[in-house]
Image (cartoon, rainbow, N blue to C red; front, side, top):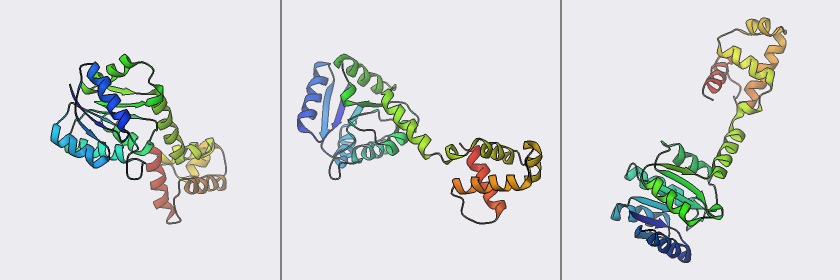
Length: 214
């Protein structure tokens, strides 16, 4: 197996290469920043890229963005992210983009070398290896970012009936409440979903689409 390592820490980069070599895995290229990773993948055509998240110049998400770019240029490129951090936006994009030949491991949670080497081989062969903590953080982000989570139980009931195409009067009859109560709930739904004042019909459609697309 041939790999490229993208890691700005020289000591860690060399340590990884040595560890991989001991496991019979060849490091054919190394990079200390995002553009270097893209170049190394294009030059060497590796079986796997091992990528840190935070690299120069800003040390935020360069590694993940470069991994996504490298994979767009070489579709199906197996990528194993090895980092101290969960960069949620691009991690979700990487993991969600088919969820095959992808790994995301947290450095401090790797306790066994043989398990790490097994993860490397599994990702290179098309498998998926995701640390449970990464999954937990991505799910937490999804819950925080989902405006539907902020709706009350009654507002959810109203929206569900709206999605069935029911009028305000029909919703009121179904829930045994007044028309005014329904209008108040709908106003609350519009506000929580961030639907700016416009025609009620337009906002109603957008609210229903948000509900159906959750």
